[in-house]
Image 1 (spheres, rainbow, N blue to C red):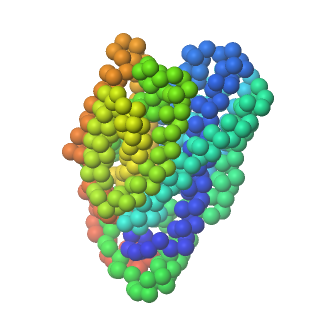
Image 2: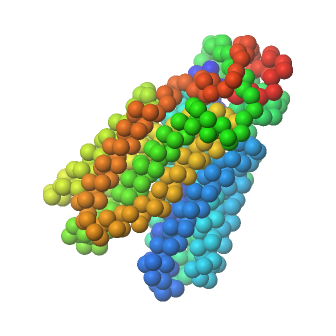
Image 3: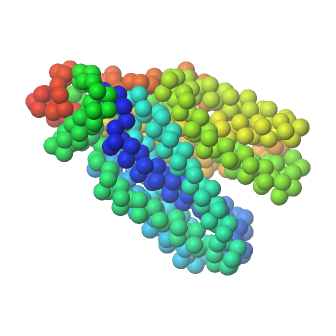
Length: 463
């Protein structure tokens, strides 16, 4: 796969399906936030009730990241993606028929479980099915398309919620529409060829690679580079994550995700409240927030300009330094224009950083543990988001909004140091090359697509 120098027809079809999957994922992820005020009025809930439902959903996301990743490493990527979409779609639909806070909380926990299981495995799938020189740009494009689901759901909510006291139910019904794309994905997406080669070598996987190679030859008019030798890997288990060098990688990734997710979510989620604390009216605060949110999709697209040209850890270091500086500017700005410009730049930087992070998450683990490793890192960030909600609330009440922004800026600098100094180099490297220092391996002779036939006796092949 890595020697293919262009995106083939198959790659482009997969891109459309993967983008559609993330579109509905992002739409459903934000559905409760959009209808929470209406549900609160309809059921006479307190702010604490709304906060409880929101917080509980993050715990579901944590579990989904890890469980989904582990199952994907055992059973394959494709079925877990479709199954996770089926889970969150079913419980999003169930949310429309909830009658109280208890059953709605349970449904939203299970929605969060499915959403994050799908996201982690989708990121893993992209990393394994696209050539090394395109991995970053494809992740950024899929994220940019996915982010369009947020304003799309917001527009739908704005249309249906005010029309009826129960109008919020239709937002959850639309959130279940992702199941349609999941059915398409089952028919269109092949199983990851890397996972297949490492677990269940098949003629279908070899035929797929052959078709991709033939399409690439037609598009370029030249022969492809020779197949590079790949190491044959022994069987593994999650216990490997407790041994070096994987222990260092999972520790660095989890620490980074804890810091950067808390800082990014802290800014996005608390911005309206922080603005009100600084003298904005509620209407002005929401108007300001919606204005700068327009930069989210362009931020992900911005990443396509450098994500495959600059080393991933270097990009994340620079992005987080910029994030920290912009937070400090935002914290102490007194002029509205400076506040607006720095806010727009903050959103651009956050989502460009998300594209780089999404690319980096699955790259640093071997195929047999890739989805689980990415799931643990992502799950650590979700738990941190849950905890940071209470920390920021306390800091806002006790220390003031400027101190909150200052602390978020310091956290961004800390994230930059962690990933920049300790992160693994991954840009333009095959996944096997990144992983080969981990395994006990012996060289595999260069061969054509039927690599397993060229290397008899090898039971587990990482890619």
